[in-house]
Length: 96
Image (cartoon, rainbow, N blue to C red; front, side):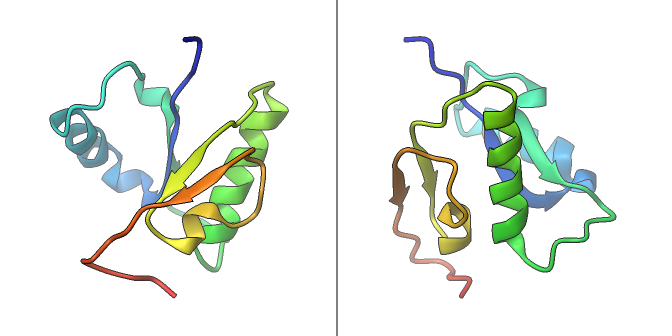
């Protein structure tokens, strides 16, 4: 359908390989390793929301239109750069 899937996570670059393995073992297909955006080890972001919004901004600056942003924490959805957002329930943890 012409959609490109990106993953933006506050996991650091050191956790990148494990994150890729987790996504692949969970059955996510149709994406490349460069479609996973991790937080740099020397990050200057005080918490996840600004980093994730900046990642979405960079994608829009690169010409992508983000039609859907899905996450299980409010920090996944804050900061704009998406036409629609959906918050998934997560009974295991909540980050205020």
